[in-house]
Image (cartoon, rainbow, N blue to C red; front, side):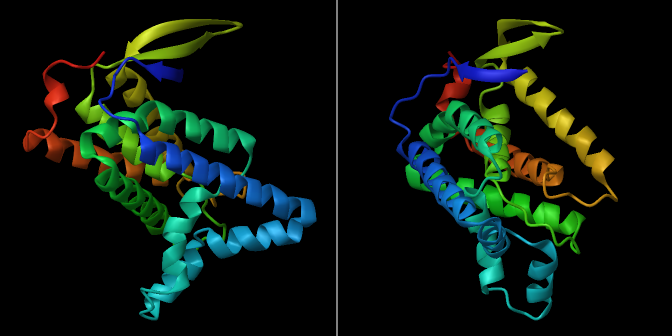
Length: 236
């Protein structure tokens, strides 16, 4: 299932969501420039600005919690490994991010998004702390956004592309089904990945899991505190 759009309207333009999309695209353009100048330069940049679990745990083991290695938990969120990686992430962010930004307001949403990415990265590091493969991508932060949407707007209708063998169909599916299915896939793939190195072209499934759980927890807190008026009906 590939979500294409939702029917959940917002009260204000999603300026922070748009800014994140633009920042990721600009960063990807920078990556393409590095690749054009040589693969070595590109790989060096990914290693420097991506999260390398072994280097992060070593730095923290020395008590260097405010080092450049810690900063990579944020910078890695704006890097992507290819066109499909970028487009897929930006599609999910654009569909689901605007509603979470609308509920939190711009600055709190930005803090939530970055914190979700940090938690996601730390989750993957905790699972494989000795890995030397850089972790990059906005997937963890976006997973946090999906988790919050899952809790806050479970009945929102998501127009979804469903493949049935050689055929496909567009159907409107509740968010709880689309995002629940996505999360179950991450769990299954994550369990299957335990004990195996996340290769350079691999997927950090536990980053997705950690981000989603964090986002769902924040969404639950918003529901408990009654800060989400849309729960009483405006789901499109």
